Length: 160
Image 1 (cartoon, rainbow, N blue to C red):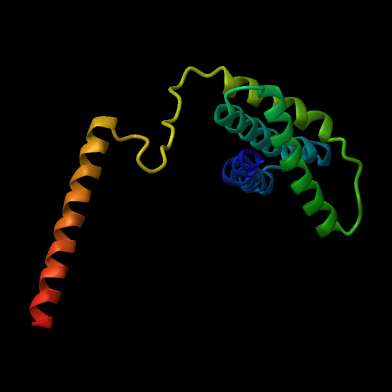
Image 2: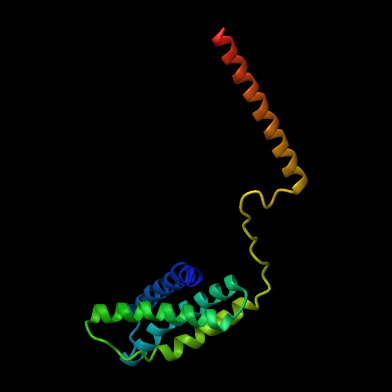
């Protein structure tokens, strides 16, 4: 689930917002018929779904169409809720028919990309070779023993 949220909030929403700002700048500068407004407004959402599906598929490295579907569904639900909130009425989610295939395509492309896999993060001492690790533990044990000897030696001096 974290993969979907990261792909949507770090990739899908910023791309959609920047695309919508660019479309708004284009629409203010051009004289287009009102029917073209919907097409230009949908393109940033499609690009955001494609890229969030790509990122989710690349992160999971399997089940690309499912990861892309989930990322596109989440992004579309966020924008649908925002549109219903600001317009104070609900719409038919016709865009869902366009955005979900874009997200699935992005997920498939993300899984099949030939970019190198990200390095796995190791926890604790898992990345230290075993021989070095054993030597370090032995050295730490010797230091601890020396420290205990000096503390007990100081205590003897104080007690005398």
